[in-house]
Length: 256
Image: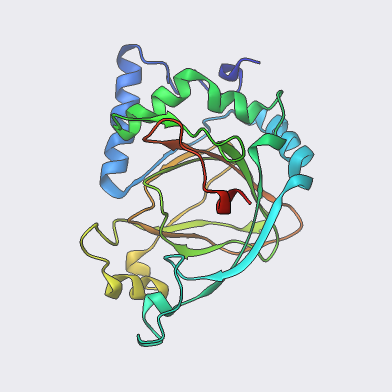
């Protein structure tokens, strides 16, 4: 299987040669520098989306579902703080992930992830000097499933960046919302976070990601969420995991 048959290489030159590649990388770097988010619309061509949906439909039965309540930081409650404090604001979270080992040897999603030019292109866009594919056999490339009533509430990521490919949207809902650079390594900016949680529209940006769109997002310092979904159609998103150290795998607790 040749991943370049799925990626729209006529529009996106992702192999490191020539001016078109340099222009594309420079644009992505500028977008990431501006607000921590870059999107390549139609990275996978529309004529290939049905193949990706079929793959997701085939493995959806292996989805590991998780239902819990969480705050934006994935931490425990702090009863010593006011009830309005972001650390005390908990929301329902419903998600499902298909582990990487269920995708199979003929996986298109895995072929894209393991294609060497793809990783080098993402590394160049992020400007990372150390960049490796995640070595975890259960979580290097996974499919996220979200169903009616589900979504992902406001949160900060625990990793520096995420790379995702939209494959199928729900019938309605599921927009991606974010508040760029809301905190820094030295300032949690709880006042700003509280304003976003209260719905301040001046701090929130909304993206409608369509099937085939590739998103690179720096979510450690940008608060973000996936809005609730409605209708019988499942929302599919592939998540490609890259890390800054070789040989990294998940903890035994996370793996379980």
